[in-house]
Image: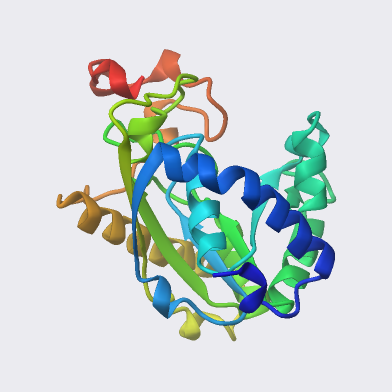
Length: 266
Protein backbone atom coordinates (compact mmCIF):
# COMPACT_ATOMS: atom_id res chain seq x y z
CA UNK A 1 0.00 0.00 0.00
CA UNK A 2 1.33 3.44 -0.85
CA UNK A 3 1.49 5.81 2.08
CA UNK A 4 -0.06 8.71 0.20
CA UNK A 5 -3.19 6.69 -0.54
CA UNK A 6 -4.39 7.14 3.05
CA UNK A 7 -3.17 10.58 4.09
CA UNK A 8 -4.08 13.00 1.31
CA UNK A 9 -3.32 16.13 3.37
CA UNK A 10 0.36 15.28 3.72
CA UNK A 11 2.63 17.68 1.76
CA UNK A 12 4.11 16.30 -1.45
CA UNK A 13 7.63 16.92 -0.12
CA UNK A 14 7.00 14.68 2.88
CA UNK A 15 5.55 11.92 0.74
CA UNK A 16 8.52 12.01 -1.62
CA UNK A 17 11.06 11.96 1.20
CA UNK A 18 9.31 9.07 2.90
CA UNK A 19 9.13 7.20 -0.40
CA UNK A 20 12.87 7.61 -0.85
CA UNK A 21 13.66 6.51 2.70
CA UNK A 22 11.26 3.59 2.49
CA UNK A 23 12.85 2.47 -0.77
CA UNK A 24 16.13 2.10 1.10
CA UNK A 25 14.88 0.81 4.46
CA UNK A 26 12.02 -1.56 3.64
CA UNK A 27 14.10 -4.17 1.74
CA UNK A 28 16.59 -4.26 4.61
CA UNK A 29 13.87 -4.69 7.23
CA UNK A 30 12.18 -7.39 5.17
CA UNK A 31 15.49 -9.23 4.98
CA UNK A 32 16.23 -8.88 8.69
CA UNK A 33 12.87 -9.89 10.18
CA UNK A 34 9.77 -11.87 9.57
CA UNK A 35 6.69 -10.04 10.72
CA UNK A 36 3.12 -10.42 11.88
CA UNK A 37 0.94 -7.31 12.12
CA UNK A 38 -2.32 -7.41 14.07
CA UNK A 39 -5.10 -4.84 14.35
CA UNK A 40 -3.83 -2.52 11.61
CA UNK A 41 -7.10 -2.71 9.67
CA UNK A 42 -8.87 -0.83 12.47
CA UNK A 43 -6.45 2.10 12.74
CA UNK A 44 -8.20 5.51 12.57
CA UNK A 45 -8.28 7.11 9.12
CA UNK A 46 -7.41 10.61 10.34
CA UNK A 47 -4.59 11.81 12.56
CA UNK A 48 -3.88 9.92 15.75
CA UNK A 49 -1.28 9.44 18.47
CA UNK A 50 0.39 6.04 18.55
CA UNK A 51 1.80 4.97 21.94
CA UNK A 52 4.30 2.11 21.77
CA UNK A 53 6.43 0.13 24.20
CA UNK A 54 10.20 0.62 23.93
CA UNK A 55 12.51 -2.39 24.32
CA UNK A 56 15.35 -1.83 21.85
CA UNK A 57 16.98 0.97 19.89
CA UNK A 58 15.85 -0.57 16.62
CA UNK A 59 12.13 -0.61 17.38
CA UNK A 60 11.50 2.84 15.82
CA UNK A 61 12.54 1.30 12.49
CA UNK A 62 10.36 -1.73 13.17
CA UNK A 63 7.31 0.41 13.94
CA UNK A 64 8.03 2.92 11.17
CA UNK A 65 8.31 0.08 8.67
CA UNK A 66 4.96 -1.31 9.78
CA UNK A 67 3.16 2.03 9.72
CA UNK A 68 4.47 3.09 6.31
CA UNK A 69 3.69 -0.33 4.85
CA UNK A 70 0.12 0.16 6.07
CA UNK A 71 -0.29 3.52 4.35
CA UNK A 72 0.70 6.01 7.03
CA UNK A 73 3.58 8.49 7.31
CA UNK A 74 5.01 8.11 10.84
CA UNK A 75 6.39 11.03 12.84
CA UNK A 76 8.14 10.69 16.18
CA UNK A 77 8.43 13.03 19.11
CA UNK A 78 12.22 12.77 19.40
CA UNK A 79 14.84 14.41 21.60
CA UNK A 80 16.20 17.52 19.93
CA UNK A 81 19.83 16.33 20.05
CA UNK A 82 19.03 13.89 17.25
CA UNK A 83 18.29 16.82 14.95
CA UNK A 84 21.87 18.09 15.14
CA UNK A 85 23.53 14.76 14.30
CA UNK A 86 25.20 14.45 10.89
CA UNK A 87 22.99 12.82 8.25
CA UNK A 88 20.43 11.69 10.81
CA UNK A 89 19.64 15.29 11.67
CA UNK A 90 18.90 16.10 8.03
CA UNK A 91 16.69 13.03 7.72
CA UNK A 92 14.79 13.95 10.88
CA UNK A 93 14.16 17.50 9.71
CA UNK A 94 13.37 16.67 6.08
CA UNK A 95 10.88 13.95 7.02
CA UNK A 96 9.01 16.23 9.43
CA UNK A 97 9.91 14.61 12.73
CA UNK A 98 9.06 16.62 15.85
CA UNK A 99 11.91 17.76 18.15
CA UNK A 100 11.31 17.81 21.89
CA UNK A 101 13.25 20.25 24.05
CA UNK A 102 12.98 18.52 27.40
CA UNK A 103 14.54 21.24 29.55
CA UNK A 104 13.79 24.55 27.91
CA UNK A 105 11.03 27.10 27.60
CA UNK A 106 10.56 25.90 24.02
CA UNK A 107 9.37 22.47 25.11
CA UNK A 108 5.76 23.43 24.40
CA UNK A 109 6.63 24.17 20.78
CA UNK A 110 6.73 20.44 20.06
CA UNK A 111 3.05 20.18 20.95
CA UNK A 112 2.24 22.91 18.43
CA UNK A 113 4.14 21.12 15.66
CA UNK A 114 2.61 17.78 16.65
CA UNK A 115 -0.87 19.27 16.43
CA UNK A 116 -0.13 20.45 12.90
CA UNK A 117 0.86 16.91 11.94
CA UNK A 118 -2.31 15.48 13.50
CA UNK A 119 -4.51 18.08 11.80
CA UNK A 120 -3.00 17.03 8.47
CA UNK A 121 -4.01 13.43 9.15
CA UNK A 122 -0.54 12.31 10.21
CA UNK A 123 0.53 9.86 12.88
CA UNK A 124 2.57 10.96 15.89
CA UNK A 125 4.47 8.08 17.48
CA UNK A 126 5.32 8.49 21.16
CA UNK A 127 7.20 6.21 23.52
CA UNK A 128 5.49 7.18 26.78
CA UNK A 129 8.22 5.51 28.83
CA UNK A 130 10.64 8.15 27.56
CA UNK A 131 13.50 5.69 27.17
CA UNK A 132 14.16 1.97 26.82
CA UNK A 133 12.33 0.09 29.54
CA UNK A 134 14.30 -0.51 32.73
CA UNK A 135 12.09 -3.44 33.66
CA UNK A 136 14.32 -6.54 34.08
CA UNK A 137 11.87 -8.63 32.05
CA UNK A 138 11.24 -5.98 29.38
CA UNK A 139 7.68 -5.16 30.42
CA UNK A 140 6.54 -1.57 29.81
CA UNK A 141 7.38 0.71 32.71
CA UNK A 142 5.54 3.74 34.03
CA UNK A 143 4.82 6.41 31.45
CA UNK A 144 5.42 10.13 31.24
CA UNK A 145 2.44 12.40 30.65
CA UNK A 146 3.44 13.96 27.31
CA UNK A 147 1.23 11.70 25.19
CA UNK A 148 -1.74 12.29 27.47
CA UNK A 149 -1.19 16.04 27.40
CA UNK A 150 -1.07 16.08 23.60
CA UNK A 151 -4.18 13.90 23.37
CA UNK A 152 -6.22 16.06 25.72
CA UNK A 153 -5.08 19.30 24.08
CA UNK A 154 -5.79 18.18 20.52
CA UNK A 155 -8.68 15.74 20.95
CA UNK A 156 -6.76 13.22 18.84
CA UNK A 157 -7.39 9.52 19.52
CA UNK A 158 -4.64 7.54 21.24
CA UNK A 159 -3.93 4.12 19.79
CA UNK A 160 -1.92 1.70 21.97
CA UNK A 161 0.57 -0.59 20.24
CA UNK A 162 2.90 -3.30 21.48
CA UNK A 163 5.61 -5.30 19.77
CA UNK A 164 7.73 -8.29 20.72
CA UNK A 165 10.72 -9.92 19.05
CA UNK A 166 12.75 -6.90 17.96
CA UNK A 167 14.88 -7.25 21.10
CA UNK A 168 16.16 -10.56 19.74
CA UNK A 169 17.56 -8.78 16.68
CA UNK A 170 19.13 -5.95 18.69
CA UNK A 171 19.15 -6.60 22.44
CA UNK A 172 18.48 -3.70 24.75
CA UNK A 173 21.51 -1.37 24.97
CA UNK A 174 23.47 -3.58 22.59
CA UNK A 175 25.23 -2.25 19.50
CA UNK A 176 25.48 -5.61 17.77
CA UNK A 177 22.76 -7.15 15.62
CA UNK A 178 22.00 -10.85 16.09
CA UNK A 179 21.29 -11.67 12.46
CA UNK A 180 21.04 -15.45 12.57
CA UNK A 181 18.71 -17.14 12.75
CA UNK A 182 16.30 -14.65 11.16
CA UNK A 183 14.09 -13.09 13.81
CA UNK A 184 10.31 -12.67 13.83
CA UNK A 185 8.55 -9.59 15.19
CA UNK A 186 4.88 -9.40 16.12
CA UNK A 187 3.17 -6.01 16.36
CA UNK A 188 -0.33 -5.52 17.72
CA UNK A 189 -2.44 -2.36 17.53
CA UNK A 190 -5.35 -2.03 19.92
CA UNK A 191 -8.51 0.06 19.89
CA UNK A 192 -8.21 3.72 20.87
CA UNK A 193 -7.88 4.30 24.60
CA UNK A 194 -11.05 5.71 26.15
CA UNK A 195 -10.19 9.20 27.39
CA UNK A 196 -13.56 10.84 26.69
CA UNK A 197 -14.36 11.51 30.35
CA UNK A 198 -11.06 13.36 30.75
CA UNK A 199 -11.12 15.59 27.69
CA UNK A 200 -13.41 18.44 28.76
CA UNK A 201 -12.21 19.10 32.30
CA UNK A 202 -9.06 20.83 33.58
CA UNK A 203 -5.78 19.17 32.66
CA UNK A 204 -4.53 18.76 36.20
CA UNK A 205 -1.60 16.57 37.17
CA UNK A 206 -3.96 13.87 38.42
CA UNK A 207 -5.97 13.92 35.18
CA UNK A 208 -2.83 13.64 33.07
CA UNK A 209 -1.57 10.79 35.22
CA UNK A 210 -4.88 8.96 34.97
CA UNK A 211 -4.82 9.27 31.17
CA UNK A 212 -1.20 8.09 31.11
CA UNK A 213 -2.00 5.11 33.32
CA UNK A 214 -4.83 4.08 31.00
CA UNK A 215 -2.54 4.28 28.00
CA UNK A 216 0.19 2.22 29.64
CA UNK A 217 -2.29 -0.39 30.85
CA UNK A 218 -3.45 -0.95 27.29
CA UNK A 219 0.10 -1.11 25.92
CA UNK A 220 0.98 -3.62 28.64
CA UNK A 221 -2.13 -5.67 27.96
CA UNK A 222 -1.24 -5.94 24.28
CA UNK A 223 2.32 -6.97 25.06
CA UNK A 224 1.07 -9.59 27.53
CA UNK A 225 -1.08 -11.08 24.78
CA UNK A 226 1.91 -11.23 22.43
CA UNK A 227 4.09 -12.87 25.06
CA UNK A 228 1.41 -15.20 26.41
CA UNK A 229 2.37 -14.16 29.94
CA UNK A 230 0.86 -12.35 32.88
CA UNK A 231 2.19 -8.80 33.22
CA UNK A 232 3.43 -7.46 36.56
CA UNK A 233 0.77 -6.05 38.86
CA UNK A 234 2.69 -2.77 39.04
CA UNK A 235 4.68 -1.15 36.25
CA UNK A 236 8.40 -0.66 36.87
CA UNK A 237 9.27 2.77 38.25
CA UNK A 238 12.98 3.67 37.79
CA UNK A 239 12.87 6.14 40.68
CA UNK A 240 11.99 3.32 43.07
CA UNK A 241 15.10 1.43 41.99
CA UNK A 242 17.60 4.28 42.06
CA UNK A 243 17.65 4.57 38.27
CA UNK A 244 17.67 7.67 36.08
CA UNK A 245 14.42 8.36 34.25
CA UNK A 246 16.15 8.78 30.88
CA UNK A 247 19.38 7.82 29.16
CA UNK A 248 21.42 4.62 29.06
CA UNK A 249 23.58 5.16 32.14
CA UNK A 250 21.64 3.07 34.61
CA UNK A 251 23.77 -0.04 35.12
CA UNK A 252 25.38 1.04 38.40
CA UNK A 253 22.00 0.97 40.09
CA UNK A 254 20.52 -1.95 38.16
CA UNK A 255 18.70 -4.51 40.26
CA UNK A 256 20.19 -7.89 41.12
CA UNK A 257 17.56 -9.50 38.91
CA UNK A 258 18.75 -7.51 35.90
CA UNK A 259 22.40 -8.33 36.54
CA UNK A 260 21.54 -12.02 36.47
CA UNK A 261 19.71 -11.83 33.16
CA UNK A 262 21.28 -13.78 30.24
CA UNK A 263 23.75 -11.91 28.04
CA UNK A 264 21.24 -11.71 25.20
CA UNK A 265 19.51 -8.90 27.10
CA UNK A 266 22.63 -6.96 28.13
